[in-house]
Image 1: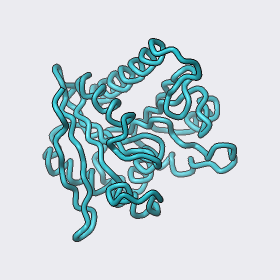
Image 2: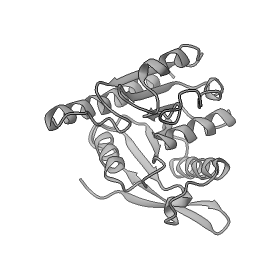
Image 3: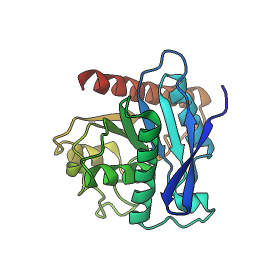
Image 4: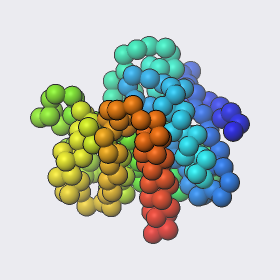
Amino acid sequence: MKNPDELSVTVQPGVSTTALIYPADHDPVGAVLILGHGAGADQRHPWMVGCARALSGLGLEIVTFNFLYTEQRRKMPDRRPLLDACYRAVIETVRQRDGGARPLFVGGKSMGGRIATHVAADDRRLALSGLVLLGYPLHPPGRPTERRDAHLPAVDRPMLFVQGSRDPFGTPSELQPVLATLSSRVALHVVEGGDHSFKIGRKDPGRQTALLSEAHRAIVQWIEGVTRMD
């Protein structure tokens, strides 16, 4: 598999970040999925690279990117307005590059997915076909009352939540009552035994690989279903 192409994204005058484009492999689905990284690692973390390569191998074009703080090698995430602005700039750049020809989905791992939901909720003008949220951080670990779901009804696009059954940031059983209140088309794929990064508790490489492959196929199948309905 060839290395991804680099794309420069201007976030503010004189300030840019780097995106990586993983072209769709054989039998492309015909859609593009932008994935933001989590708070603790950039787009070149093995988890992000593995996810991008797996999904591109299943026919999706994947775009990952660095939020400005990771691009600038800072550890502390930026405040949300700047995170939002960075994600929005990536969307606009990808749209310009693509000419709006293909369905565009957004999402990401943990914080990256949460920021995608805020961007979608804040701007209905964005032509987004749906969102893919990998380990949505419903609340900080150990603080279940500090919820991050008040804005979700305003997203009003199809959403796929992929959640580990042991996720300390929000288990599927915690998510389900929230999802039941949303008017948009919502789906939940549970990674049985998975934590926030879908890692299972016991050392079983075969089982781990199978669960990740199942999650990747579920993402592609869901996107195919959404694009057929649009």
